[in-house]
Structures are given as C-alpha cells and as structure tokens.
Length: 434
Figure 1 (cartoon, helix red, strand yellow):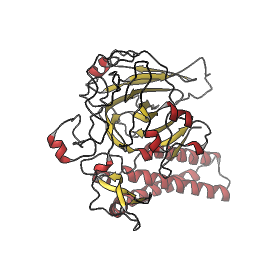
Figure 2: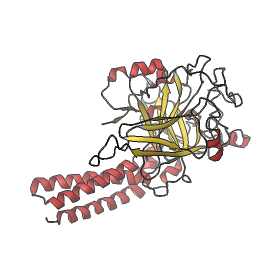
Figure 3: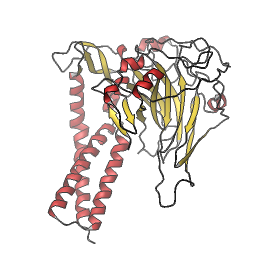
Figure 4: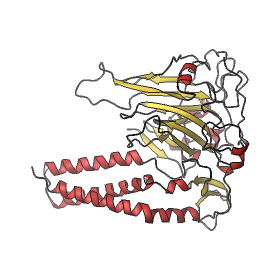
C-alpha cells in the first residue's frame, strides 16, 4: 500500500529516484535558453495568462510570473540556467509499464522520443503553445484473469525537463534552487508534480516522493477548458513510498534544493478524465508578499518572512467547507455504525448499506482533499503564516479572523446539512431487513 506522509513540521522531504544513463546530447534546434536566471524575479501579473515582460504587470506586484513555461515559450521551458550546451528545458515523455496495465500516450501531433527541443514541437503547436495529450491505460490480458480487479494505478506515464540540461558527455547538470520557495503550475487533468534531485541526494534517500496537485475530480466539467492555477511551497511536499524507509535518512529540504536536476509531471489514473494540459510553470517566490498589516498569533514570534499566503477569493467558494463537512459527516456515520453494531445484530442489507455509505463519503473526501488554503495564486496575497526568527512558524491573527468568519457563514451551515443527510441515510440503512 502506498503511503503519503506530510512533512510540514519536519521541514524536510525526499524526492523521486531517477536513474540517468549518459546519452548523447542532441544539438538543440531552438534558440538559446538563457532568457531568465534562477533568482527571485520581479513579479508580474499572474492573472494574465502567458504574460512575460510587462511594465504594467510589474507595477501590480504579483507573486507568480509564469515565464518558465507558458503558451509563448516555444518548444521547451525557459529555465535560464543552461549549462552551456543549450539543452536545458527540453520536454521528454516516458512510460513505465505496469504489470497489469499497458500504458501509452495519445498525442494530438507527432511526438518522438529523442532528447531534442523539437521532439514535441508538433504536439505543442497543435495544443496552441501548451503541452497537451491523453494517457491511455488498458488491462494487460496476459497478466490478469477475468476474476481479478483491474489495477488502476499500476505503472505510470509522465513528462519532465531538466533545469541545466546535459553536458557534452550526456550527464545531467544540477542547480541550486534554494532562493525559491515552491512551484506554481497551471494545468488541467489529474497530475502529481515531482522534483528530480541529483543522484547524490537520490542515493541517500533511496525512495521516490511526490506532491499531489489535483483538479476537482468530482466536477463533471473537469475538461480541458477548466484549468487550475495552484502554487505549492516546498515545505508542503510529502514523502511517497511503496515500502518501508529509514526516516533518519531524510534529507533536509535546503540540501535537496541545492542539488536539483528538474521537474517531472506524472499523469494520475482518472477514470473520468484521461486528458491533460500543462499550460504554465514557474517558481513560487513568497518573499514578495509584504509583511505589513499582518501579525503573528504567537506573541513570541519575531517574523522574518512570509511562510504561507492566502487569497481573498479562497473564502468565496464552498470547496473548503465541503471538504470539512464531508470529513465530519463520515466520522459521525462511522460512530453511529459502531454503536449500532455493539447494541444490535445488524441485517446483511443494513451492513452493506452502511459500508457503501462510508465508501461513498471516503470517495468524496478523497476527491475534495486538495482544497487547502494557500495554493491559489492571486494578485493580492495576504500572509497566512510567518517564519519566526527562532525557527518556529506562526499563523497570522488576520487569517484566523478571516477563517472564523468563513466557518460561521459557510462551513457550519454546510456541515449541519451534511450531518443531517448522513443521519437520514443511517436511519434508512437501519430499517433494511434481510
């Protein structure tokens, strides 16, 4: 069973293991990749898709400038830290076949598997400047029989690019990304983002990791026209492992970021939507958020920089409230079920009904779990939490006040309705007889 462990308090993470063979370096057929540099950039208006250089945008002072990859980038990401061979930012695609699945990409244009900036050029042209396609997963009939359940997440398909590129011998270079604080992505589909560390870090960890960035799978309109912008700080990345691990070997985030090779985007299994579209990518620089007009809730905290932010628009939707309400309704229904089992002999129909109800709430909670504050980029972010001089962290008073109002006006009414529905469902299940 795969496990996802959060590392918010530990401030450390591991990243995906990546073995790299020394391949011949293809001569790039695109222009040099040195437009940007790996330092906190002057922020631009992130709400304007594809904007790169604009005096008006600079005056707005937004925290996200999608200049590394957007619909005007050409055929590769503009990392700005090429190692001199002009091979950085080249998109490549890969499939790790599973035991039970056959996996393949379905591209809208011609795609080759060469390490060259033109390998996906026809695809990007047909996608209007972004990187789009479809991932097809089909059961391997030679490995499973009709009685076995189809293994949905067996194997994987992904795209990736390197920040510095490859040297003349085909070795992948690394960069020091400690000046940045996270990654912002605009996309549609169901993806996970992994950072690719140097081999030295990978050998220390011997484990693969990822940060899940997900669309609202419950939304039937989750199509290519419904893209999402999300920003994730590096401290929120989590460990992803399929086996046991030695937690004493966890490498601190600052050490991992000091030896970073690239970005990998994995396309997760999603029965309702197999399409994807990678629209824009860039660093997340939260130091641009002003610390004025916000105060730490911990009186002993001496703020040194903004550690997390939120947007006013996050308090105008019911997504977060539905997440909380679903969790509470599930907890209540399970408690009622356990009490009933202790006091009564339940019919088989009642047991099946209650189990199905709990499974449904689990699915809904899984769908909505990505709705956490602080992931949406906006033009006027506010401090959610500060990093303190003593190494601790403190949520701001202003966020607590804002969230308190949100709870009273939106969360609690939805939670009451959800629990009332769970109560009605429980009574219905209890009325069933064999």
